[in-house]
Image (cartoon, rainbow, N blue to C red; front, top):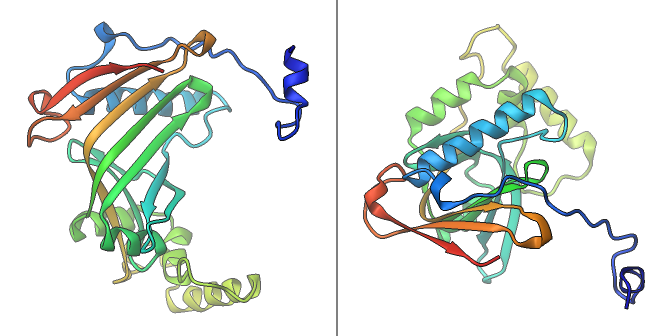
Amino acid sequence: MDSSSRDSAPGAVAAVRRVDYSGDGLVESDVAASPYLQVRSWVDAAVTAAADRDDVPEPAALSVATVDATGTPDVRTVLMRFLDPRGPGFVTNLDSAKSQHLQANPRVAAALTWPALYRAIRFRGTAELIGRDEVEAYFDSRPYGSRLSAWASDQSRPAADRHELERRWQEVLERFPDTGGDHDVPVPDFWGGWRIVCDEVEFWAGRRNRLHDRIVFRRTGDGDLADAGSWTRLRLQP
């Protein structure tokens, strides 16, 4: 059966686009000593690429998977706003669906994916709340409109229509006028952040003929992502 026949079979995606990945791959000799150094290297490369080209529009886009009270998985994309040896982190409403899931079951998985670079990083571990001082420092660095939206959105709750969102926005706009200062919009009590304390970090690099590279670090000690002695490294088949 030729490829055109396969693509037109019942249930097939119409006009399948096939791309043979031409990435640089990832060999053991090029892998950093610790997962943090490797994550930092790839994230920095993605940020640099985003500044120079149009096909890496949001290098910090992080897909986060949680499990709800019924055991059903749920996934959404947020922006990675923290990255240090303790793990990647993101901000959110602490009453949101994702936060409720993590409060009940802190096990979490997340992924950074850069299709144009033929690279991805997968994180698996446990979520913990980010300290209030870090949250406040980040919140004050946000643009004025982003700080307002934290107040205006009752995240994950139903809204009657777009008008309701616009009305709530106008209310907080009047409540917290723009003074041009970092503290003109206070941090809501219900707003915070989560950090992923990783047990496993996998680096995926696309190769031709689908013979991709997968290098994974798995925790063997109590150290952070920068502590090379707390991790073992192995290659997984694609």
